[in-house]
Amino acid sequence: MKNVLVLGGTGFVGAPVCEMLLRQGWQVTVPSRQLSNAETLHRSLPEAHLLELDVHDETALAQALAGQQAVVNLVAILHGTAGAFEKVHVDLPHKLARACGAAGVRQMVHLSALGADSVQPQSAPSMYLRSKGQGEAVLLRAAGCVGQQGGFDLTVLRPSVIFGVRDKFLNVFAQLQKVLPVMPLAGATTRFQPVWVQDVASAVVRSLERTDIASAPDVPLVLELCGPDVFTLRELVQLSARLSGIRGGRGRPVLALPGWLGRWQATLMELAPGEPLMSRDNLDSMRIDNVASGKVPGLSCLGISATALLPIASAYLDPKQFGLVPGLPT
Ligand SMILES: NC(=O)c1ccc[n+]([C@@H]2O[C@H](COP(=O)([O-])OP(=O)(O)OC[C@H]3O[C@@H](n4cnc5c(N)ncnc54)[C@H](OP(=O)(O)O)[C@@H]3O)[C@@H](O)[C@H]2O)c1
Image (cartoon, rainbow, N blue to C red; front, side):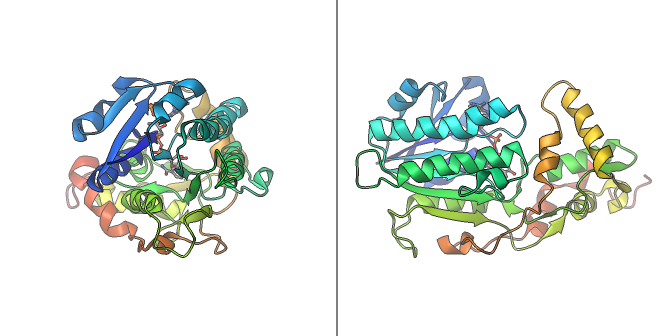
């Protein structure tokens, strides 16, 4: 039996990753900061072994890694201070690399993000992307000593924005248009290349089983995970309305905000209680397009053909759930 530890396995990408790994015969263990965060995963995948663990505690992490052949790191935050990004995206990879060395774990798949740059991390426009690039660099350096004690086979996956039934992206655009009279939108012209969560999960599983692809298994592989289509943010907002039937599919008028007004809106959202919908750092990320660079291999390198957004999203953005059924008065 192959054993794998899936950090961040309770999240949006984690659930299909765990499901596919179990289907492929892996024994899956998922640490979570709080077992209550893992309830949904436990209900859908009772075969996955859950563990309450502070992944930032290096000793506890090394203990959890003992006896594992592989580790998948899906832990990340989207909002926070520079210190919080550093802790989760840079310090945790450091600890993970050392703990893998101590426990003899030889395979790692690490989820990064499109736009991160491990060679020049500081060139990225936001704290999120800069810290993601630094985290990649830490792992690529640590994996470089394959063959020596502490080395491991590494795959770094950089997805664009990810869509799927439980996404917080098209679902949120649809929910907002259900209640707002207009959609004030910062970064309306930024382009994205959304990738399906099931394709991302397949990429994780195939990365762990990569013996049949161009790169030798002991050479770190960096891949960009993108869908087949490019959309501006404005087009994605409009698409979410069309598919969910908001105002008979017409959606709300999109009000593209100039930069200064977008920052003001993001500041207000950061001040609101709970997880912000948007932060100034998110806006900084959107200063560059989130599309394939063309310089790094993609899903096809793992034998995966990228799935189009439209047929998948139209199945889960159900007009009966989100909007007003076309034809009814709005
Ligand atoms: N979703 C996207 O559109 C997207 C796009 C590009 C890249 N990615 C990358 O893909 C990976 C998975 O993303 P996702 O959307 O599945 O994320 P997610 O749903 O937010 O899940 C992340 C998991 O990490 C754990 N976590 C969160 N904050 C933590 C902290 N401060 N310390 C320790 N653990 C923490 C949580 O598990 P517990 O609460 O159980 O501890 C959570 O379930 C991430 O690396 C992300 O950057 C995602």
